[in-house]
Image (cartoon, rainbow, N blue to C red; front, side, top):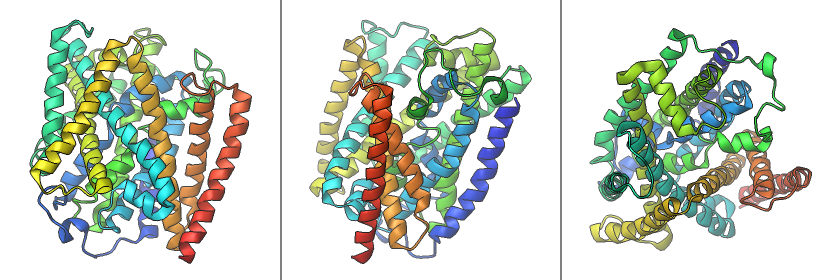
Length: 478
């Protein structure tokens, strides 16, 4: 367990040090926040620091930090080092700066920030990507918790012919509609503390179980990096697309800007944005270790689905009662991301088309249009045998692509304010290389050979860096 414990030390220690550094660079002050200045009782609603933090954690922690690491651990114990380093230097920094920049810009959502710092043409491209991502998140995060509930709790078949499955989907769907329409402090602010308690209890239970059961874990010096994955997948880029939410996730920026509208003080940003991403990294580390343990013991293998591994881990580590709580915690995660994803999409669409969201009728009509698309995606995922896999792959790739835009926006903001913009430029370049090489090679993309994908991806990455520097200098002169 040495590599795993070293990774935990890097995650927690690095989060403390780099989080403080990020806060010092940004310099939060006592100015009035958007929640206090524009309180409308719907989206701009002042809430306490710990409630905001818990909502942010549940917003960003979908199935990604569980299902992603379960698949990513097939690359070996290198995951125990790449997750914390990427989380500290990339993901947590990305979330913190996105939320704080939004607060400095009247609670603007990500599309508005992209338009302000990257221009109207980039804004159009970004809007297409982010709206597609939000719709995919909504569909995926009805599908996965619904299937988990039916198979793990009800012990029933999750096939399309089972009417119980569609009833469960319907209940989640109705909750999403309610959470999307009502003021943020009336639904989300009330139920999230309960959900948060279940989430934390399940994560702590699995962590303790790792040591009590003595799960065997591989060490980095025993396995190495290359040639570990049973299917021979390339570590770069596949690992970083697979383990998105535990390292860097573009989806998180849309949730940070949502919570930027409920913050009472800028000084609370480090706990709410940066530290909650570190907490998500911790969840990813715990489930990665648990997945490796059950595979080493022969309870699961490379062909076992990630959702099946969840049930195996929960029951083998925590028994029937504790395992049930852990499974419920996993089911809660996507539900508490799906609802705010669709809420964010409503706000983005409202900003784009200048639709007043203080009027109930406007919120209802816009929400109905959004949910019609989500329902269509959900039906497609269940009707087609490979439908969900297609949705998940596009979701994972689009998620990381959104992060590339966010890092560019952050870099230009930092250039404008004479801050060390390389903190954003370097992770943005890395993920530009990841998303471009992945889509160039992937079966859902251009299917080019790896060598060609790496060469073209490298050229695109250099072009990305040049464009960011050019836009930053132009913005600075302006």
